[in-house]
Image (cartoon, rainbow, N blue to C red; front, side):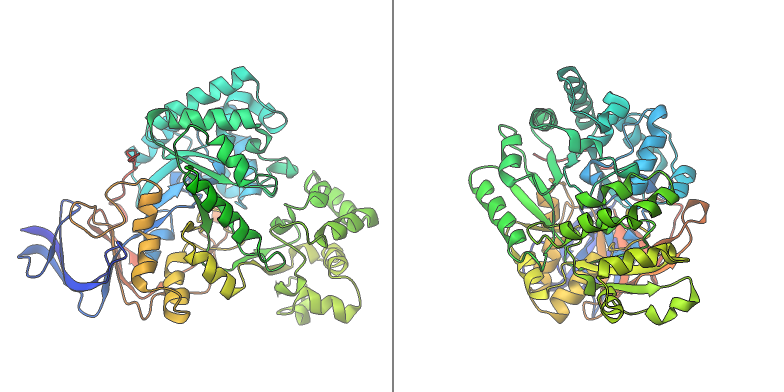
Length: 561
């Protein structure tokens, strides 16, 4: 007798092949049979009229800190995600010495838009090294399955202390970092993640440690990762990091490279496609590469107290470096600062998170009632009406009473549907980039998989549902070398989701105050999901997580080459 049979389901198995109607049997958390009339089971679910698909594998998350206080990685499992990959961009919390905890937290507060109070009150520091971190997660338990990169910035700080934020490493320090990377891979690391992106800055605008690494350090640490014949290299690239650079770093490693974040910029229409073309050429030359793309428009909420969208702009650096609000106000009031900032924003040769499209920045909510008529309007329209430059209006407004607290929403990148559709269908694309667990006050894209089915399958019809499910499940497992997941075939773990494809989708985001210390975050709900199973255990029913005390996930430590 099986533990579970789901019968009469439309099975979309994650292989990309056509769906079929049938039954699936599960025993000890493993899919053991599929077909018709499979026999008896302790639990039988009639899924007639619904589709059974593999659970989504979210390969770009930042749940590293949250998992220490929230083993469920909320809200991902209720959105159909059964496996998460953490440590992306190299922004991890292990390894971390006790004396570096405050530095690590403050850097995460800035670079990942996390609440300082929530991190201080929430992180459970029952570890120092990367292997100890994995052991802690495993002994405490996790809701979804977790695979983890060892993070470059954390390794740098562990070896170099505060010097990691100011200089390149010595040969001895690189050797020490190599030892840590090897130890982390032996203990079950997925690979090695880093960032050279100009917008990745820590406290007071100081570049994240990985951005100080030279070519020798990058190559040596990638080679340390690959010492055992496996490992995935992940990079969030800056504008000065070419695919040719990455290919040289990867030389002789025989490992795949994942390049983020490839988002369409309407002011530089061909740039992202050029990167994907370079990735294809590198792959043809023998260095396997994938470009991480997103199926969602990149939008974020922000206030001028913490305008993350400006942080990739060099001229904004004096504002980031201010230690007090008063100094910050003095800087943004300065005419020379404004002139340099405007010149850089209007330089269309640069490609950044924000590129001067002021019509896509909307006033969402004001704190001072006299500004209520501004709500729902774009900065471009407001500035035009006032006969001033949009940047001047924004900075002047932030200096007014309660202006720093005005909430804006910016529609930044990936807004051109025709272009995004082409990115999603590119053969070297890896559809992901939820950033789940980070930027909680700005946006929440943890439901990107359901959005993919809603927007790009049902509404835009750019691919079949079988192709979309393959991209979100089986293809993810293949790229990241995750064994026994991503497909509904015998021998695979029973990570499954039961959906109505005609209703699958996500809600609008809304704010809740459930982080440690009562800090707020944006939340999102899923539609059209009737059940989620992780390793054969049902975790979602009636749109709510069930059996919260029983944590069915596994810390994944074994990957194929």
